[in-house]
Every structure is written in C-alpha cells, then in structure tokens.
Length: 496
Ligand code: SAH
Image 1: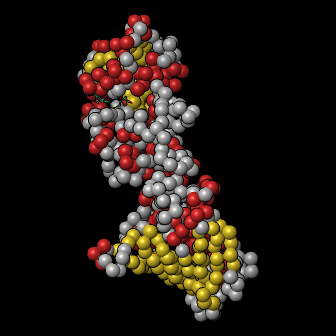
Image 2: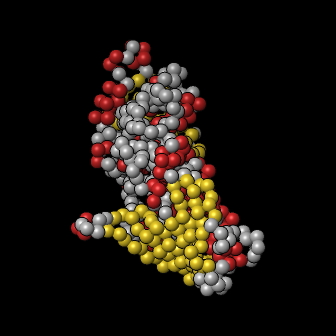
Image 3: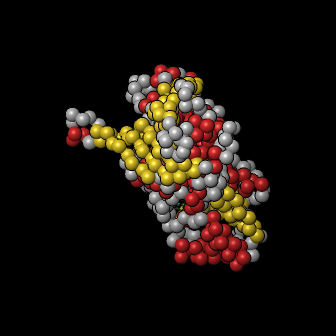
C-alpha cells in the first residue's frame, strides 16, 4: 500500500526536513508486519512528494502476534486484503517512519512544524464501509475529499464497484503534524478490521493522537466506537464483549429480559484476540463468575448483579427483597449468603417467575433452604402489604421497563410504603449508548425499555426520591468507566 504526501509550499523540499527524511535517499524501516520504504518521486523547490510504501509480509502476518485470528475460511489467513489495504499497520508504519514529524519536532528548522502548508495526500488503497465514509471522516477536518472507485471486475460491470478505493485528500493549509495525525487515527477507523494485532501500546497511542480534534468531530461517536471496539479486542476483552453490537435490539433476544447485554450465559465466548480457530464454548459457574478456563471476565449484567449482591452483603441484612427479580439471577447470588434469613423475589411476569423457580431448582431445594426464599407475582405500581418489613430492596434494571409517568407510583410503593432501610436501584446509563455501534441515536438497548436516562437524569430522579422520602443517597457507576460517557450502568443506593 502506498501513501504519498505532496506540497507546493516554497521551497517544497522543506517537506524532507519536516519528515526527517532526506529526499535524495531511499530509506527502509522495519515496521510491524513488514517493511516501510520512504522515497521521493519528485523533489523540486516547486513541488515535493514523499511516498511511503508499506510492504507487509503476508506470511509473516500469519505468524506470531501479527497473525490473523483465522475465523473465516481455511485459507483466509493467507488470502486476504491485509497486505494491500491501509489499516492499523499503516498507522503503525506512519508513527515509526514519521514519528518525529507527527510530534511536531524539526531539528534543523524548528519553526517549520508550526507552518501550515498546502498538502495533497493519496492513499492507495483504503477499504471503507461505504463510499461516503472517507468524506464524513475527513471533510469536517477541512479536507477536500475525492475517492476513486474501482470496478470489482472490469469485464463484468454488473458486479459494480469494489469496496476498495483510492483516497485523495487536499488541504489549503494545515500543519504536516496534523495531517499525519488525522491519517494515523482515521485510516484504521475506515478499515475497521479488528482481527489483526498491532499491540496494545500502539492502540493507546492511536486514541491519544485524537485528543485535540476528535471531541469536535461530528463523527466522533462512530470514530470512538470503532476505536473502542478495536482497542477493546486487545486490551479489554470485557469491553469487547459489551460492545458486541449484534446483541442490541436483536429480535432473537426478545423473550428473555432483562437486557441484551446479559444474554451471554451459555453463549460461546468471544475468541481471544490472539487465539486462532473457532471460539471454544465457555462454561460459567452458577453465578456466571468463573469459567472453566479460570477466566474471570464477566458480562456486564453479571458484574452489575455481583456488585449489588456484594453491597447487600456488606449491610448484613436479614430480609431482602428483589423487586422485578426476572429470572432470579440476583436471587441466586443472595441465596449464597447464609446470613440472609429470608429473600422475597417479586415480578409482574409469571413467565419470568416460572423460569426463576426452574433455574433456582426450588422444587428440589432442601426444606430448610426452601424456607429462605419465596417468589411472588405482583406489580410495583400497586401498594402491596407483602413488601413490608424488609431491610433491603434491590431493583436491578427494572425502572426503565416502566413508563416514566408510572415511576411516581413505584416510588410511593417502594419508598413510601414498603420502606426498607436500604434500596438499590440500577439503570442503564444513556450517555454510554453512543459506544454501541448498532444503536442509533435515541434508540434503547432493549426493546422493552421505556426510557434510558443519562447520568444527570438518573441523578436528578434519585435525588428527588431521596428528598421526598427521607433517604440518604449515594450514586455509583457500574462497569468500566469510559472518559466522557461514564460506565455502562449506574446505581443509586438509598439508605435511611
Ligand atoms: N432484576 C432482574 C430482571 C430485570 S428485567 C435482573 O437484573 O436480571 C426487568 C424486570 O422487571 C422484568 O422481569 C419485568 O417482568 C419486571 N417488571 C416490569 N414491570 C414490572 C412491574 N410493574 N412490577 C414488577 N416487575 C416488573
């Protein structure tokens, strides 16, 4: 793959100083996956072009850490577009070959990096999700964007164009440092191939490079989502799993609440970033906490439940309510705490309760254990004497299943009448939704959600409840925090 940068800044050969590469010499550099060669097809005072030719070794890519994960057809790891398409490998090569320029340093002409230059960039080739994407990514940064399409097969025009393009970018005046940084960050975003490993350090640098301009970019959501996905695949497999957009609003998930993120139990594991071959089935322990390989990564929902169970445990309660208990995942964790004398699970859904009874094996439970738990059908919108006399109540991912205008009724039932000493309420954090690739703006994570609140909305609601009913309030984030958007879920802990 070939990347050329041209300028007509006078003298144009200053480009050589900026790039720290002498126009008179061909230079070859070892880079991740192969070799980069830098040379100047033209170098006159009027116009200068620096070319970076990246020569990736297709067989080398398969070996060691640079390898493909090989999830596709048998020969995919040998027959693929990696050596030819601008991707994270080109970014890694850019940072190795032009790192000094990217940092804005120029030994011989220290003032030059601050100079804006007319620049033209050509990248052959990029693969993009659609022909409009190069424009959406580069135009907001002031580039004039042109893409050259290529027919899939010139002899069969009805097959249309391939998804590979030659990209031309032009800018009237920009610092070279900025151009390099834009390419460095955005080329892998266009490519979005997450099956190739260039190293955690490189991935972090990529994010860091966007710091100045990304926050203002209109497609920042798309860019960060792709990045986080990409980064997540290698750095944080839990995040990768959470970001599996396929699970969102997938009709196949409709029957089993609570939310799509919880439905990984029994599902195959995500392949590890560096593993090859097909994913191996993952076995979860009863709480979903440790799999057969001793892997302690949890689904978001399991994390949520464990966090709530842990907090409840710390309060050493005797009687605990699980309101909107669903299929009984929290109940199962609570049953494991022997000091809890009695647990009551309530749900409006008969089906959910039947499933909970089955999963908890209520009918086979030893009699003493059996007296510790009951499941009842009931609605949180109606006053219910059975909910009185408890130390703690949990509502894990329940409130967003009710219409917002019914929350006052729920509030009266839980905080006004049942009045346990502590109440835990969790709900999705809508600020985080932009990280879910398949979730369009305004869409919810689950079809049955009636609303999803931002952190500010949740905090405002919780503060109102606490004030109206005389509870102290503590707000917690649940799951890993991402700068700017918070954690996937949020929790309010009320205590009298
Ligand atoms: N707390 C469980 C389930 C969350 S899904 C868990 O974390 O796994 C939301 C649950 O709230 C569903 O089981 C749904 O049936 C229940 N629910 C919805 N409206 C309700 C209401 N008015 N009263 C009681 N439960 C309700």
